[in-house]
Image (cartoon, rainbow, N blue to C red):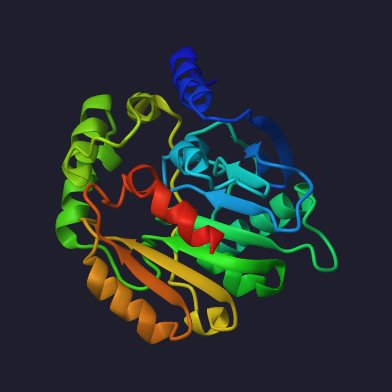
Length: 284
């Protein structure tokens, strides 16, 4: 049972989105997935499906929506099953492998109506969501129009040891104080992050915990025929963004790869502080 304070914090962030939000629950074999959707229904552009970073919830995309991400297209922001948010995992069938993740996403896209013929979607993931998106693209490239990876982790390079050491106390025994201190360290106190979202992050400490699915890096050879955009956070602490961008360029020579080096563009703050550049790159 989710706490009233978590639900109130979640609703407070969604209330700050600049357009009405349509909510729906999509049933899959792994549970019910909460999707928050905005933008016009009938457009020539394919819908855009957004996968957040671990623990961030679908509400993290509010600044990108404000910056025009949903202009001229339908956008579906997803709460990852088993992660903080309003998705409800099936108690008898947990997500355990990368195969489970891609099967879940197959079912989710079916539930959103992206089935048959040329019904492709653009898929965008941030951080852990980018890792999921890259694995899905390798599994079902025929279902995607464009793949967008925002500061992907465990896709092109590993994590810095110092970042892991900083994150471990929060991961092993999360508390609101530990979560807030970690985010303040990683984002360097970036002022563009929504305070309501930070309060929601505090509330995730009380969320029922499940072990996230981990596994190998996706096979880059299976991504090379896709339209791929990779944007790295110039002030990320989780990895060296320039080395990660160089590795991505070697593995995906035809992809569009860029490091966004503005003030406050750190790994965890990226959906907020780089919202304008992200929306602009996706509109081009």
